[in-house]
Length: 494
Ligand code: NAD
Image (cartoon, rainbow, N blue to C red; front, side, top):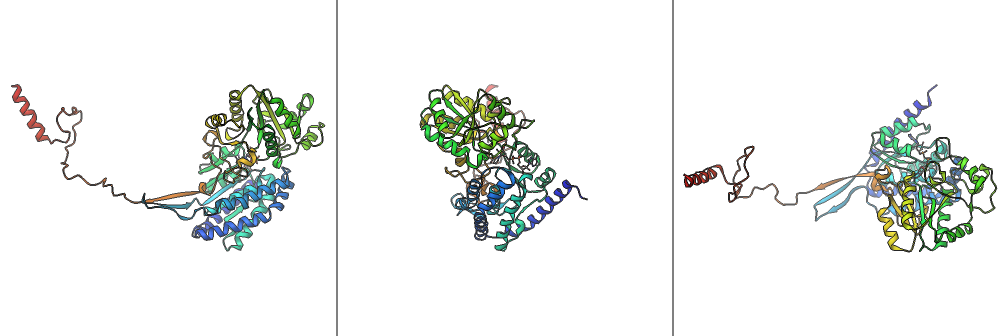
């Protein structure tokens, strides 16, 4: 009998070895071939978008199949459009004026760490951006999403085979353990890690260069000038998309007292159920595990499922369960990230107070990630943009769809950097350009930095403790000239 952790470690090493060999060949391909491979992978994944979505929901119990299919198409069709024409192989930029040529160098074998909340879409997306940059990728699946991730990899491998390139370019550990993931991270050339804070820390502690991106805790500030109905409808469309599994989904609404009742009415009209008393306590009891982390049993669930789990009755048609929140911190579970149909509701006096509260919420587990604002006041929007510790600020748009590039011009991505403030090495929506090195070949500009001017005489080394040059005496004057000058001066004195 072989121990599971040893099996997993051995498998990770073997897959990286095979991937390295495959990548050595793949890196010889030109841009055209690489683009053809990437297009074939994207098309194959798009064709299976619905089937993979259904499998992910069935296996993880998170989210909605229709929305997961949208995510799979974003990771394939829309991503393919976004990278069309992007130069990633060989000479990618020649600047004649600067006499500089930039050459893309693939990083090699990437370790792909995938969250359970977007398993199939993240595998499709990471495979495509890795291949586009000339790399191979080896995934380690979340144990609760093992089958759907393996199926996605199988579909991608079939497309690779059809293109006549090695199927080892994209592979997946079949026995996932923390030890196996750690080994994969150690032996890969770059880690592309998406998940919670524990995993991000593990990635950066591995000693291998890493792009690790972590949790969000997105506040949506509805400011007094906002189109309230539009803002609330967008928050609800975003927060209920795939039952709130996307890390950029809104976790709280923050609004001003002057419009609070109108916001509340719009929320009720959109299917909010405000929890009070016993109902609220019952929901709070099932939100977290003993260690204060999110209870997986409520992740990606709709309001009815959460109510059933908590043992409360809610009206038919309820879309989100909302709690009026008095504070932020460990004793207030609604102030944390909740990737499900639960939302905190905060009322403040003005935008300055909202500013402080949003920062507190971000500091409560989502620093560096994203923030949403609904406002028609450009000054307030600008102030927020200048001051908030986030990598993306989403204005008058659903934050889920905005952050992943469905409703904004952001790059279509399932790996959203949180910046150094959030413990990430990047604040980007990660693209193929994050997965390559650039070699710069630069020519001499003919500035003549090495030529010695004709008039320059050799300079004697300056004795230590030398005085500053006497005014009127040139610094490069030779010793004989200086001696003659001194003798002349002495003669005058004597
Ligand atoms: P998770 O951290 O539990 O798991 C993510 C992956 O990391 C899994 O494959 C898991 O097996 C692995 N893992 C976990 N701990 C590890 C460790 N110590 N060593 C090695 N591997 C480890 O996350 P999850 O619950 O699947 O995903 C949800 C979290 O991910 C949320 O907090 C969400 O905000 C975040 N997320 C962030 C982004 C982003 O782009 N910033 C995208 C999706 C999800």
